[in-house]
Amino acid sequence: MAESPAHDPQRRRTRISGHFPGSLNIEGRDVEITTENLSLKGLYCTPLQAGDHIPLDRPCVVTIRLGAGVALTVDGKTVRRDDGYVAVDFTGMDEDSYAHLRNIIRFSAPDPDSIDQEQAHIPFES
Figure 1 (tube, one colour):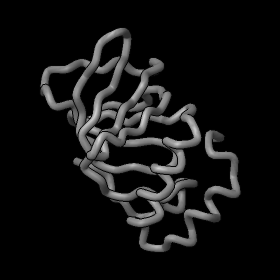
Figure 2 (figure 1 turned 180 degrees about the horizontal axis):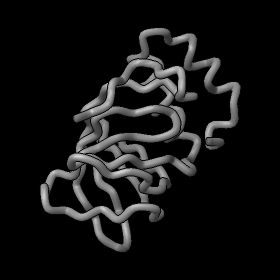
Figure 3 (figure 1 turned 120 degrees about the vertical axis):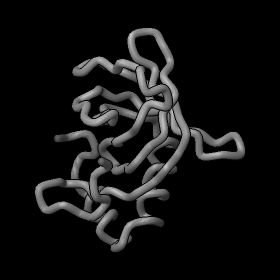
Figure 4 (figure 1 turned 60 degrees about the vertical axis):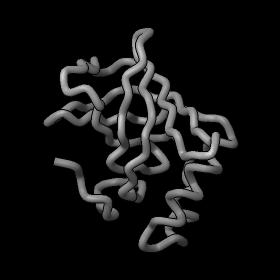
């Protein structure tokens, strides 16, 4: 079951629900995904092919397609797999991808100003 998008006090980043198509490139292969939720630090997604095996603790590159030729490309690491879902921790991204991601999160967050506070912390610290 997908996790709640609400701000969890145990988490440092606000999550928002968002069903975006994309792909996960891991160990030289592309796996089509749909995001369930996003934060400035990671995502929770489901592979489109039920049998796709996503190895854990592996570097990957995530592409999230936003439409109209706009896509985010993010370096990450697979950190959890449960009930057909995969969690990816972001490890880096270019400035344009970060700006797009921040805008998506800020626009959808219950408290947009809290996103600015989250940015006061180094984005890719755990």
